[in-house]
Structures are given as structure tokens and as C-alpha cells.
Length: 254
Picture (tube, rainbow, N blue to C red):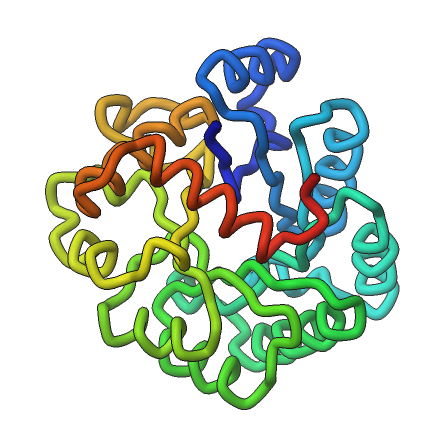
């Protein structure tokens, strides 16, 4: 019934993956996308997708790991992306939060991975933190052939509108359930239901009532429920539409 379009179950915090997958399925989550942050995590995601039917993966270098993106590693990202269960290039983007950071290298890596996605007819999963202006300018100047999603959206309604006009989906995570999420609630009200996605970004950002705990894809129903409350429609309707949206963007999901 539910889908987690962005998680990191390759993280070492997930000690017993068999138990995690069982927990995910018991929660009614039948599809998860493990997102790559570098060559190692992408390979792990690929291996998980081969072991578990419900797992798909994305291939890419997170901006905070961009120093490791060489021509050789980009070739590996491309190789992984050709896998039948790789549904996107991601997570890619810009992150100016943690200093020191190499802005020029991040922009260069973002563009290279956008070009890779376009060459492979894959969508992109975008990470943006403290870099909204540069991120929007790059997305405006580099046409994204198969579209994309702004994961764990935390920006303004104005930024959301620009992304929607560019054909992007907006993905909501556990932060939507937080008490101080007034701006995000406004964005969720504004975003058409056929452009909404849900995610956990686990093991981070656990939703209420599990805030402060280790997150898991089994908690994505809490995000879906909160989105349903904001939209004033049933959880079932939201879950069904989000699944449709995910399959439209990540078209390799069966």
C-alpha cells in the first residue's frame, strides 16, 4: 500500500536487514528505494535490490561525497544505473551547510550526473541544503529529460512552485509531522496531490510519534497519514496516488 521513495537501509545502523524488511512489509510498505550517496552505498543498494523484491535503488554521489567522484567512479555509477532495478540517478545536488565545502566541485558533479541521467533516460533525486538559488539556476539551465524529485523538501512555497513548474515532484519526509512544520504544511497544501511523494530518509528524521528514534521505512505511513490530514482526504487515497506518482517518475518500478 505504501512506498518509501527515499531511504538508506544500506546504513550500518540497520543491523538485521531480514528483520527490517519483515517489519517494513508488516507496516504495509511494499516498495522502498535505497538511495546512493557514493560508489560504495550505491553498490550496497544494488545488492539489496537483488536480494529483496521490494527494494529498488538509485545510483549517484551525494554533494557531501563529491570529492570522491572521479571519471572512474562516474563510470561505475553509470554501470550500476544500467541495472534493471536502478530507478534514478541520486542523490545528487548541492549542500552548502557543512563547511568546508567545494562549491565548484559540487556544481561540476551535479551537472555531470544530470547529464548522465539524461543519457540513460533516468529521473534524478535531488538533495539541496542552503543552496536554493544555485540549485534552481542549475535546474533551469539544464533540462532534465525524465524529470526528478526534490527529496525531503524543506523550502518555501515559492521554491516549490518553481520546482513544480519545472516538472518536479515534491517529496515529504518525517519533518512534515513535526510541530514546527508550519511552512512545510503550507507547501503540502499548495502542492497538487498528483505531484506529491513520501519518504523517510531513514535512518534519519523519524516522524512523530517516533521522533528522536532511529527511522525506518516502516514509518512512512505516518508521513502519508499527515499528508492525508493536510489534504483532507483518506490515507488510502493518498497512498494510492503517491504510488501512482512514484511509478510515473520512477518508471522502472514494477
